[in-house]
Length: 101
Ligand SMILES: [Zn+2]
Image (cartoon, rainbow, N blue to C red; front, side, top):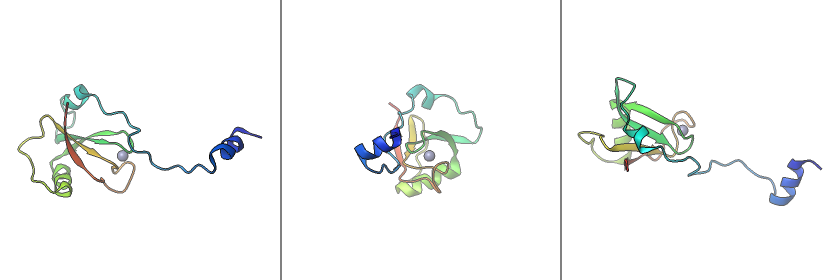
């Protein structure tokens, strides 16, 4: 019996589901670092694939629309957190604007 069969016996058929919260939160100093992209206005952390992306004004507006709030004057001290992003899904899902602590 191989290890896969043993696992199957112990746990049943294991389906790979996306696990929320498996990504470690990005470090505050990384979130506060100067942007590398000249168009960037904020950073967006994806809890689905752990990616931290710099985002431009257009995308920030789109995320704020999804959140249902107006664009702040500045994203200084804040960053977006999404459950899914375009790297791991079709779109940015359930965005939230969080304080960099
Ligand atoms: Zn993602």
